[in-house]
Length: 590
Image (cartoon, rainbow, N blue to C red; front, side, top):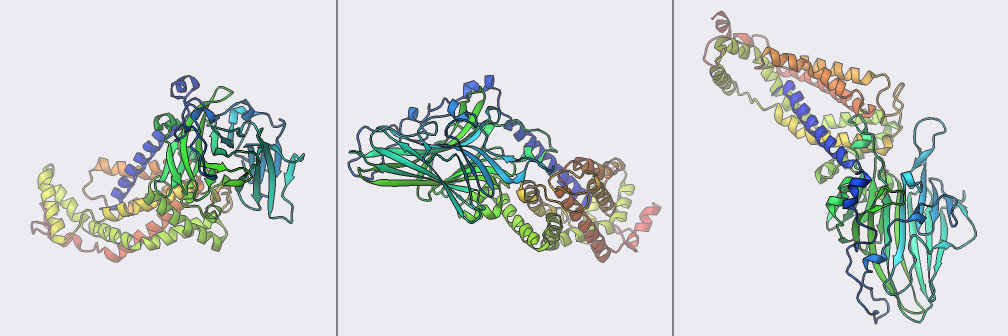
């Protein structure tokens, strides 16, 4: 197999991948309100995977109550989208987060270390947002079938008169308290605990029962947003990232649903322990992480928002608590709101949370992606520059795959060596393709040429190439990261198109070294256009991806040139006899 066929294989896989991406991208766009109404699940119309409450109160203090009826679970209402100056709003600022809390909800969250653009003075990336046109929030509350309970919509109020909190320069943590006082002597104290340098916020609820009866209830936590319409197109990396909800449990593994598929997926109602749920977007995500032993039920819903749009919601319910008179109990979870920083995500020590960096829904590509990023991250520790780290990654991958590349180029060199004889066979048999194929196969057999010898190494390398594509596309560490000179953002296109032009030149030179055995003139002309087609195809790709392909192609070109010189002996090959025993010069005379 020759390098020309390598181009064809890669072209076929890339076209298939892009068609699949385009199809998925169309599915990502939210339905218009008029079309989505029939698929809407009304707020509270469906129990999140729990049976209706059973009458009666647990006789044993601490027994877990049954899950609440569906009607008890609130969805989205007007208070959830109140304006920033609404009563009860508390502003919190740490070294990495700037948030607005409204009792049972995180109404706004800005990521201070991640500006929207590279422009000076650019506003930080906003995750949670209480503006109706961009609504996105993390909400949590309690429901009870037998007692009063606070929801995310009402109940929790600031414990102190303070309306602003800031992490002190000499402090590592900051606690922001809210409280709910029930009519029957039960109160719940909610504490938001922030840690320096961390995007994980502990949300801790402590129930104090000073009544004369057992209080029972279920905690619920949910993420809800109005999906934004993405700028579509294969030149926009954001449109290729997962834009939807995910959840994970050690037993069931990693699951994900795009927003447009919520109605088709149904409520899900998945029971799990030791997992998490999240909403993902390009480079950033939010997630609720319950306690490792807490059993929860995951559900998906589409609910109408106050402004008329359809909100998408992923919710967990549980665990249930029964608190005896005079006793107290605590339920705690972590809320992640921030970037897909692999190091910080792994520091949470939550099984499967690293899958939020969505290299692929398929485990084999996800594992490959994690391994490739690990190498890339180690190289960044050495070079302190993501551009040079990408080049270093190419060198490492090339070294690992050298045995496969060697086999590929050995096969190509052998094919190149016998190309004149194959051309003479073609001229000899003319339009009789059957005889030509028989003679060519006899030649392959006699000379021990494997016609697919160069194809197999390419196919084996494809999973690594595809995984690396997603690593470079998904890694927030490369966002706004400069390389040298004119490349100041590896996730943006090359402003001067220098790398795409170099890519075309490298592919053209590679093609010149590649044999075109058995091709007619029309096929050869088509193959000569491949470098230009691929060059135009990649011209608007993120410069980090193009840098990888230029480096990979240039090293492949040098490797191919050296191995062809080493293994090919074109001198005198035309004097060797053909498959029928006739010297090549004799064939030329016939």
